[in-house]
Image (cartoon, rainbow, N blue to C red):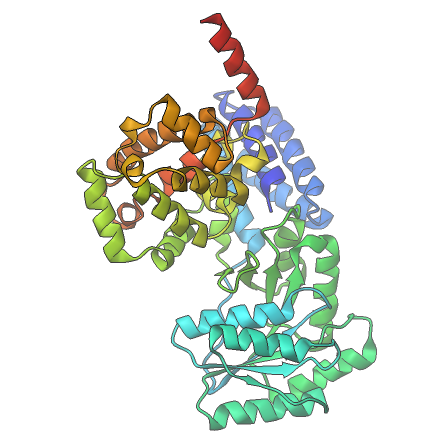
Length: 466
């Protein structure tokens, strides 16, 4: 979501680092660029102005300019102020028995899908959730929630017709009687200017008494999301925000503006279409992503959820003994795909955005991973175990079988050798990163596998010179 903003901010900081000692005019010039970058990313104007003013006051007023590393100090201040704008991490209030969570928002923001994601997330943490289908406005909304409930093995309370406030009240009573610890109310989407429907939400809130009233906001809608949040907060007193579709091409302004404008904490981020694509909101992690510093903690958490511990330990031993082969490589790719979109995963590695600035976007898409899998699956068992036997004729056969070129096969083999070397170095470390061995080097290799047409052309020229 923050690709463009992140790239522009990193360019500003790179120029600051290159100047050594800084003057006030250097800081002012850099902050002009920061202001332009934030406004271009659709950050609220007032939020941008206050943000930049605080950075300038701290940068010039704390003897930063006369320190040993002024550029690094300015970047540190920007990081801290970005965290302040995003606010403290919001956590769900689950103290009641059952805890009642009411989801509200406009039509099309992904409330019903979010209800399923939230139920799955809470079930993983030991809760016994119940979903209540209170959207009687949208055709097939009840059926959609029931389908999601079956997929994640969470029961759904529903009635075909009736008053949504009464249905929610009965749903809560059903949850209490059946020992559910959390009840999630999926209400109908509505415009904040529709007084009758907003009144219906107020009745649901008053009769069901939810401990949490979460507004589900589509991050792709930019500043409109901020205005919607303000109106919903005035109407029914929100306790939290959930930003969905943050994996899309949104400029990111809503995420950086909405908390400061409304005063309502962000509690979750929807990071993809799959039911496990939901993250608790951590302002310091999001700030690090915006500034291109990566997000290693989230990366570790996803890896620990995805990678089997015993298989990972076996893999580490194979890497250290230099017996890691292309079958292992393929298994790691398939595991990595379960963690989410490749570009999103790699963006959590510190410095990766800068390192891949020249790569075409398609090099980090899912089709690229499928191509790598096709090449490996076109090899014989012996070739996967011992890639050194793959000569020219074998390369041509593998390329025909996978729908690629011999050059692509050759590049994969080279990347595999590099990945094996990198992984051996990686597994010599300790702690959680060591348990993730293989995932990041595999991903980096996959991302660079197929060259752009221009690179192919350059290689042909080089071949003719020889």
